[in-house]
Image (tube, rainbow, N blue to C red):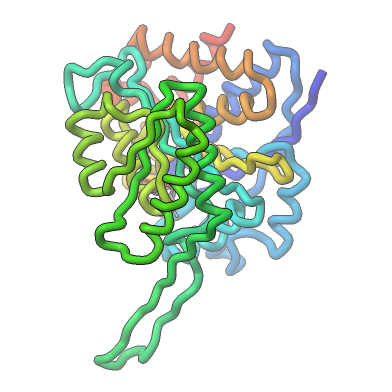
Length: 352
Ligand code: NAD
Ligand code: IPM
Ligand code: MN
């Protein structure tokens, strides 16, 4: 029997609520499928920052490196500036563990309806492959002439050949397992250096995959297409910022933010990968017990799949579908009146 060591970081706001439900479901799956999960819980959060001045301890990354996987709730809460909380916890983990792929699959699940109306699940199924370690998310830059009329801020983007090539290649490989279509998000008409570089690398990798239909689309037109003609999209690859924005949109046009999972993946497996919902800590509904835990439960299933527990992962996905199809236990974002805990328990119970 395999035992997996899992780091749990519930974080802030609804991150805490949905993490409890994901753990409930994972523990049930582990029991039923004959493997062990050894959890270690970390209180790294904005609350910790307020008490100690740091989101995580100085050796936090070192502590996490011993785990097989990391399940993260969400990070960020009013009272601590977002760039401080996120650059103090989530972003350092992604970078230190070279989790350069952020995989964000979305699908219109049975029993739910799209805001687009009248669309089927087949039409609304895609995956955003987001570059997760460089690009527009960079600490290079600075603020100058503080408090003066000529004050300014500079923010550099970093696009490396290695960084772009590996995420683009990942997207093509993934496309081969799906419908063999890749769309690259660009903005090379307006961004003069980095985006033409991105396009050039995309075109050269595409040549190695003649069996995959490759196209590029400027991000402004692409967001319109995602709403008006989403069936044309399957694998969408984008830079860190474009991938971030596209993934909330893709979630919104399928079942909503409460339904979209993500994996921060280190493909070579030299470091632990980290799984989390696409959504944030939702301070507007935190502590009310009404957050939809499905995104976090599906992220937990992605983690099991990554660890090689494919059958258990599929069982969780199928049970989520079954509970949604039955429609008796739905949180308010899905039109129901159930609590976060009701929905988590319904999935755990449905597993067997
Ligand atoms: P958000 O995703 O937290 O919330 C956006 C909207 O979606 C809110 O109205 C919220 O109530 C709703 N929502 C989100 N998840 C939901 C769920 N599971 N069920 C029901 N409704 C849900 O985005 P935001 O408001 O921009 O950010 C809030 C905080 O979270 C900020 O501090 C932000 O920096 C942080 N954040 C963290 C992560 C992360 O840790 N991965 C991701 C995004 C945002
Ligand atoms: C996400 C979040 C983060 C990101 C923020 C909170 C830094 O929006 O995981 O999508 O932009 O990567
Ligand atoms: Mn985001």
